[in-house]
Structure formats: structure tokens, C-alpha cells
Image (cartoon, protein in one colour):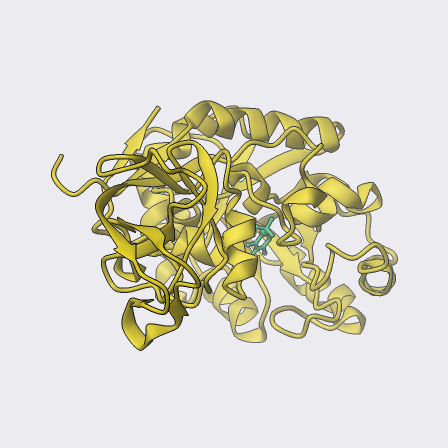
Length: 356
Ligand SMILES: *Cc1c(COP(=O)(O)O)cnc(C)c1O
């Protein structure tokens, strides 16, 4: 391999994290959420490490078809359903469970001529106001859907806007109860945060995503530090050059960082074109030669500069962990003003990926 930047995926950690979910929600089935190319990990690389799941949930028809072609025969849930009515023959052919969140989808299902009826997730808008029917409409939508020859089992589904907060699901749960009145239907409500922290939201199927990949749904690693989850992706590289700055000298674009004394700086082969966040400031943690140190100066397209003061023996070729087992992706994300989700999904195509 030439340029040393590399993403390593720990597939055992993925299986471990699924077990953590099962322990957290022992009475529920699990939709493993693998949208966005499995949160940037690569669906084709990782799905078989999750083959003890009860089902896979995603958005993209091409990814669902890929799973079928690879031999997955279990349930597949399309979280936003079909985007156009002309996808329904493929939903039929590949036996995909569809979410229904809008009137036009009801009409499309009514008009559809399928080989066999589809399972449907009826989406309730419980206050997030992105997708779904208002609680007062859910009963009539259910009555319509159940009368269609194109519809088989119906499950109630909703999504939480702030399940990472201790009091974050009370209001939406009340709306969901209101919507569900008079219907004995299975329910699927819980994302990772609700799976870990709100057992009252577990019901029949939980839908964890981020926690499977070993990052925190709250953006704070300490919130999951004792849960047993383990990071799946390690982004690593090497020091490719060393500079010694004199007092007052700057490093990198914009000269944002100036040495306060003579200081050794390592240049790492990784930049924002690899998916490292450009907005990570000086002080963002990084591991060099097994020692915690920090980023100094601006992140460039292909390079990052780091303080070598805590690791005086680290020179060219020294290993660098940008995030992974030691430097949690949540730490890097929060330093850069974002969440682990975004960094995982933004891993750049030019970074080679290996599994272990
Ligand atoms: C992305 C998504 C999830 C998973 O969310 P996490 O916070 O990653 O656990 C669950 N349900 C729906 C509808 C989603 O879009």
C-alpha cells in the first residue's frame, strides 16, 4: 500500500455491539439500520457480521437489492418506503417491507397489482414533523391500508427527535398512544438512544443504527462507555515528515497555530479529503505512537499537523490513530462541532478499507 491512510473495520466489534443491543432490548426483534452504506462502513463488507440480526433497515433500493443478491432472505425494511410508485414492482419482487408516511403512497398501494401483499410500517408523526401521519389520522389510514389486497401485516412506526434526553420521549410516546388507540398492532419506535436508555419504547422491533458501529447516539462517549459497545472503525495513518518550529513560527494554512517555544510537529498523511473534519481545531485529540496528543494548526486537504511534544521518540513512520479504539470518534466529532454519525458517513472513497 502506498499512502498510509487506512480504515480498519473490526467485524467482531460489530457482532459484539449487536449483542449489546440484544441485552438492552431482550424482548424485541432488531432491525439493524444499515442506511448510508452502513454508516460509511460499506454494506457489502459488513452485513454478514450482522447476520444474527432479525432484519436490515435502510433507504436505498439498490442496497436492498444487493442484500438479496448476497443471499439475505430475512426481512428488509425500507425506512422511507418507496419514493415513486414505479418502484413497487421491485418492492414486490424483492419482498421489501415498506414504510408508508404520505397520502400519495396510500394511493399507490391501492392501485398496485402485486404478486403477493407487502408488509407495511405505518408511520406516525409523533412530533418530529418530518415524515408520518398525525396521530388523529392514523386510525383511518390503518382502516384504508388493511382493506387493500396489496397490504399484508401492518406495524406502527415512529421516530424520536431527542431520545438521548432523559425526558426526551414522554411527549412523543403520548402521541403514539393516542394514535394507537383501538388497534392491536405491533410497534417499532426505538432508535439507538431509545434502545439503550428508554426500555418503555422497545415494543416489538427496535431500530438501532449508530450504536452498532460503536459510537454514541448522544455524541458523548461517556454516555456509552459502560454499555459494552466497541468502536468498529479505526482511521489510521502515519507520520510522513517532522518539523521543528522555533518560538513564534506558524504551521499550516492561515497560520492559526504558532509555537510558544521550540516544538516538534508531525505531519500526518490524512486530511479533509479523506473524511477528517476540516473544522477540527487545534487541541483535537489524536494518538501518535500510542500516546495521546493533539492536532495543531488547520486541517489541510491531504495533511494534518500534530504536536509531538508528548511523544519525543515518534518520528517518520510512527503510527497515528485519528479515531478508533483509543481516540473515540465522538471526541473528534464534538471538537469539530459535529456528531460521529457525520464523520463515519463521510469517510472518503479514496481511503482504502480493510476488515479484521
Ligand atoms: C437512522 C434511523 C434509525 C437509526 O438511528 P440511530 O440514531 O443511528 O440509532 C432508526 N430509525 C429511522 C427511521 C432512521 O431513519
